[in-house]
Amino acid sequence: MELDFEVVELDEADHPDVGDVAPDFTRPLVNEEYWEDASLSDLTEEGPTLLVFHPMDGAFPTTYIWNEIDERGFVDDVQTVGVSVSTPYEHKDLLEKRAEDVRLFSDPAADVAATYGIENDLDGMTGVTEHRPAAFLLDESRTVQYAWAAAEWPAFPEYDEIEAAIDDLV
Image (cartoon, rainbow, N blue to C red; front, side, top):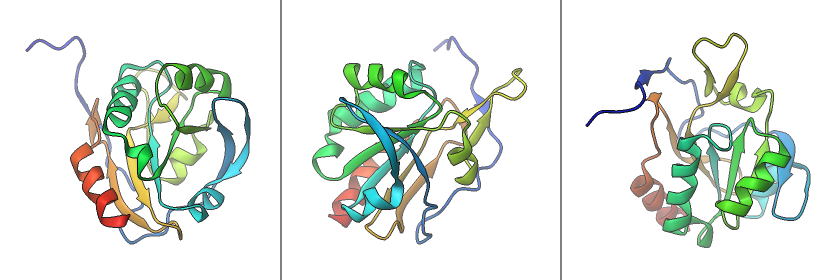
């Protein structure tokens, strides 16, 4: 099969792993109606949370990631929250088209991505960084129950593994 893009190996990620406590952060959290600053710890206190990092809204990997999450119905079992460099305004558009019943953190400077060790410096664009695809399933104490981060671009989460981890947790 001829691909319209080149697969690129990424530098090794230094992300939280199973058993680690995921770093807390506060960023604008967008839902279908409004946004407000919220912390990850406030969300996880409500119950298990699937934290999904994705490239900017509108990028084809983002579309595929959220379509698959929607189809599998992860939001029926755990709260599902995304994080990307996109602004709250861009997130509102993504929420209208896909990512049903999801909330999205806005991290335009990619500070959260850096904290999680999953930043992706875009080739040929000095100073432009976004989030590499990654997924972390967290329990109520922010302890990582499942961790995955892309090792190449593009790459997509292991959805069957996420589903199994959710089944084990809930």
